[in-house]
Amino acid sequence: MILSFTILLILIVLSGFFSGIETAFISLSEIDLIEIEKSNRKNRRILLHLLDNKEKLLSTILTCNNIVNISASALNTILAPMYAPILGISEGLSIILSAGVLTIVILLFSEITPKSIALYHNVELSLVFAPVISVISVLFSPITYFFDKFSKILNQIFTTKNSKKHNLSEKTIINVVSRGEELGVINENEKNLIQNVFLFDEREVYPIMTPRTSVFALMDSMRLSEVKNELLEKQYSRVPIYNDTIDNITGIINLKTVYSHILNHKQDSRLIDLAQDPIFIYETLKISALLEQFRLKHNHMAIVMDEFGGMAGLVTLEDVLEELVGEIYDEKDEIDISIRQIEPEKWLINGNIDIITINKKIKGEIPPEGGFEVLQGLIMSNLERIPLIGDSLFIDPHRYEVVSMKKNEVTSVIIEYQPHKSNK
Image (cartoon, rainbow, N blue to C red):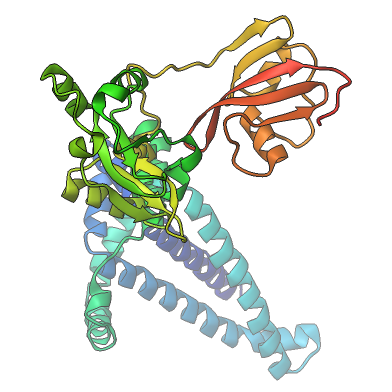
């Protein structure tokens, strides 16, 4: 009886071994395999050889695990009647109880526990036990060959043509990229760029456009001589022109064309004669589709229309590219991240500066209520909309005025210390 119990215990341990090693092999990611292949770790060649034929590997492990579990169950059934006199119960009840106990033991010690351990130590366990599994694979090859062929026949019957293709989901690739950053294979900028590429198709034009209220546009009937100074001062690379109202955009002027006409003394030209045909799009257009329109039409600016046919704003190629690579600054762009005191109790502050930093520099304290980290979050929350240039509000003890915007972001704000005043 002691020998039988010893054999049963060995079978339970073997069941746990095969369950754990199955999880270890299957949970190896592409990044793990790349790292193993690049390393000089012992047994790496054996492991990679096993993984070259995953179907055979899985068949070997599952076959062994099932043989062990069936053997344990059979041996337990043989031993069960011996418990009846000891426990003072019938043989039938003894068989039922022993089967229940064995099931619990296998679940805890041969399934859940070894698989949990293997999941967190998959690389180490796979490398250590690869030679053992390789030998077992050779010994059981006649049996696994039969099961492998049988499973392939079933796959051909039940698997459709399209489902045979191994398609990685976007989520899987993004997870692999994040794992790659953790391992140092790629850096943070590369990770962000790759993730932005996958999110590209899902993003719409509306969040990245410059809103109508911030658009600089000119009447198409004006002559170049009337507006050249303003155009050169603004330094926009492209400017929309309109007829009567800004809702009726008739073209886009390229600053290169303006320079050319000035140099050739053609300043009497009307703006409409210098313009390219505009691209009109709706707010819900995906930015990936917009990028394709820019490519096909050789134009880097599009007019965004709202659901009523009016102008909602405009979007440029630069706006689209910033969704991929982050903020792009021209040489003429001013990158102001400072807090500048312009009067004894008045400060000009960038909208993206955190409130903790601001409170250290100005008179009076911005209240911490609301949980906002940066200044523009505080302003947007209190206005309950996207701010406009010139918007002002009072939050005791300060008056806030929005003085510049870029797209939908507050770029600079004047804060004035006005204790004990109310917002009128």
